Length: 143
Image 1 (cartoon, rainbow, N blue to C red):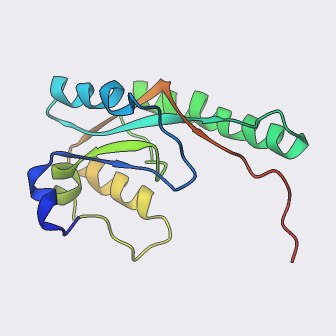
Image 2 (tube, rainbow, N blue to C red):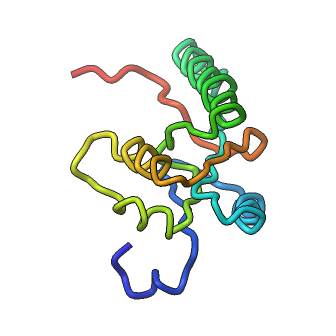
């Protein structure tokens, strides 16, 4: 965020390396910012390519679907606040800057910036119908 070219942009999309957004991801998300100048974050849903591969992936899918279907969606609708998942979201750069920026000092930097942005009055929305694909862990890793 400290690069010179950032000053020319309004938004930043954040993805972990194992996430695969659709080519129209920005078209599906950035329009919401145009409609609402108070909007700081658009969070999208994760969708799992291999959710039926084995028992572990089925359990992960159940757990994460609950997170998105209940926690994220309900909090988005009723509270206008939910934690940023750390990936598969678009931030308004001004919201990040107004809230003190992305800080690596904590192991929960995604929740940290979400709380600070919310306390600064920025609004969030969760888009359950915009999905970003990833592959679930398929086996337990032993030492």
